[in-house]
Image 1 (cartoon, rainbow, N blue to C red):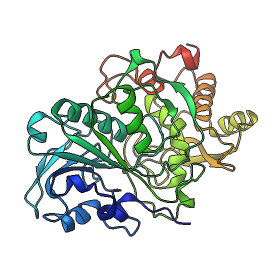
Image 2 (cartoon, one colour):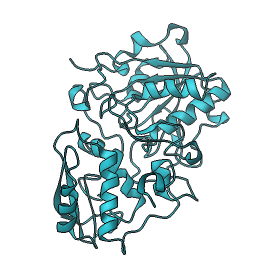
Image 3 (cartoon, one colour):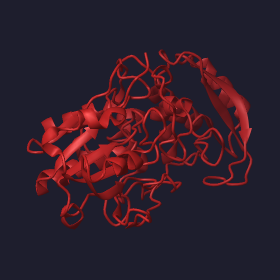
Length: 362
């Protein structure tokens, strides 16, 4: 049975007491209905009737999903047709200011998360909840599926001493929650005075992967093109903190990886000898069109997930890094700061959410 999104039933789910309320909406390119209509168009259709649309907000990668990489900021602007502000929450400000919220009664949030702590959309939600609690603005979150299922969790719990924009609250790397469930946890554990409502999905079951929901996949960020990408991301994102290409600048980001100095045949053999659950490594060669080693021949491997229910992406990502360090320790390097607005700690510590020795034994 097809999952139905709250966006598909906005009129029937919208609280009666909020009819005519002034609305700000935090959206991105994947904020679409099950029929691929963007939330901004649906809200515009209800404008002046069910609600009064006053402002849009956008997270990392832009309101339109256009900016490519980490720490590529975008600037606020005026919506060309509606004449309302589109505020950037990935630029000068990552948290709405009092001025941005001055004419907003309710902040509506409709973002597609991908199930990993590093993915920054949930932290934009977190900061919005903090600001809305402070300024008395109600928050309504439209729930969406966790695309890599709502059952499996993996990776360390965030150490509160290592908070950053890729981890601001103690959750695991693969958190196993929907964005609505995370919002409720943030309210219960961090923002008790935040007036939060969750508009629910219909027919979603925890064990579902996204391709079992009947919903269309819309790219939530430029390097998250498919469900296959999201499946490996909770582990392969760790390569961002190294001098190994994580496949950005190719058609299979996070599924392929390598560097010019790697011996692909040896790495492939070493990784397959580990017999990691649900995955096979195929020797692979590629030339990124941008990002690390742009235009250079990289040698490495592609992950082929054979059994996604047994596959453990975080463990796999850690083991890949360990093996490359063992084979090419003289050329492997940890990336240095900055990374996602963290200017002091190593990016790998920012990502794992704790000291490097807790995972890699350094």
